[in-house]
Length: 93
View 1 (cartoon, rainbow, N blue to C red):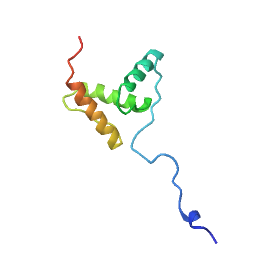
View 2 (view 1 turned 60 degrees about the vertical axis):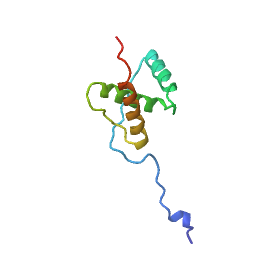
View 3 (view 1 turned 180 degrees about the vertical axis):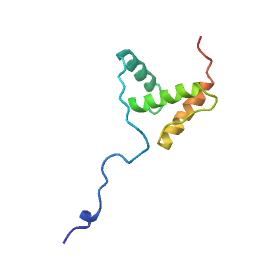
């Protein structure tokens, strides 16, 4: 007789999302700047999440409307919050 546990299908790995993996080589100085930036964030995102947020911030600077690329609602909300904060800062010269 099989146990109930054997009847439960195990889902392994990440859930499917509509995205593509991208491999990027970043200079040590660039990584240092990314790490410094992410340490200033309240929720201390990992490097991949920090890079996603920085890309969203950069893309939102080129248009009037903030762009949100994140697949998770939490990440999207945080990116939108950061974009709003960045829009209120004086521009560097």
